[in-house]
Length: 501
Ligand SMILES: *Cc1c(COP(=O)(O)O)cnc(C)c1O
Ligand SMILES: [Zn+2]
Image (tube, rainbow, N blue to C red):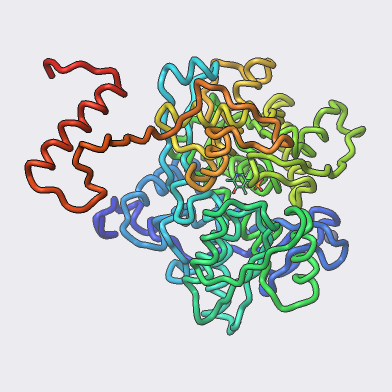
């Protein structure tokens, strides 16, 4: 819709203006730093940062009902920069002019209801939000759209040039960073550090295809992360991990979309996310808190974070009920099918601790729960979901395993409606399906295939006398003979008899 067609009171606000006074805030010492320079950690105390808007309170002059109208009308705009996460421009990086926004089709991912049979299996009604339908097939594109839009703004308006964007990755961060960097080819080059043998072939193919320098490091993600941290502190590189607070800002769009999808009534929901480096759960909580602060939503949904017992530092931290006695300890990860979340020392842990405290302060102790699941549950849940019409990856399976556990352990009221983050597309993790179907999991995964969930192709072989298309083109008579034989054989395999349609 053209802007002149919007109602007169919406028209001036439907295309947002540049506004706000953004700064980095240190979560350790509370210092503030300007955003002209890319910062990842506090120069004073080394703690992680979040981005805040010094003019946030200005936004409160607009009532929540008005914000809801603005965002809903904005759905009808046909302006590329406002078609993705920046529909919520005022909340997500409003110092960036709309023309500078990089939009590659991210955001507004479908929310797909699970059918009755699957809900019964889970013990709760739920929907998947398919973040695997983002351009690089994972939710990471939300944060990258934000980080690279800001980078583009620095290039276009602040004379920044020759950027080397760098990240460590369990697979999806590098796919996403390389994609967005390649869109800015000419001004931005990218390099990604991957743990050798710990990303899937599909994930490896993505940054290679986007033209990134791909460097495989012996070790696990936590080791790669230490190397890029060292690089970002000593070399002129732009760090694209979620340590970069612009990533968090963009990923908040996930919560904004859920709010809009449910007409801003979210108090009855339980939003379920897998936890790896903990950037996503940070952003999800921050996003809902912001909406609540502006009166755009009136109550907060419950949040459930899920970890595998092979990579569970956040779960272990919250096992202790008494806040003052909790102590964070990194863990040594073990092989996990939820490989994208296989992280023992999450960079965003200080953010999680802060935000959980704030969230619980508003919505109650039970409003944020962390549950642990095992590898078998994760694999079985992914396969069961995908047998019921979904495209969940192993981390989406982890969410489903998590809600089942949460219901069983009475950490989730089954009258709630759960929204599960299907964080990536199933195809990225096809190797784990293959290991399951062919019973070739290495023992350390601790996954034993259940026969009823296995699947394999059946090869049809033709006896010698039957014309075979493999041996060259068939004449019409031979072809009929082949079709006749093959269809009979297929009917035999499917156990169907000739008869009415
Ligand atoms: C990155 C990733 C996660 C983990 O998210 P964090 O923000 O690191 O906690 C989960 N699932 C998929 C598919 C991912 O790519
Ligand atoms: Zn500090």
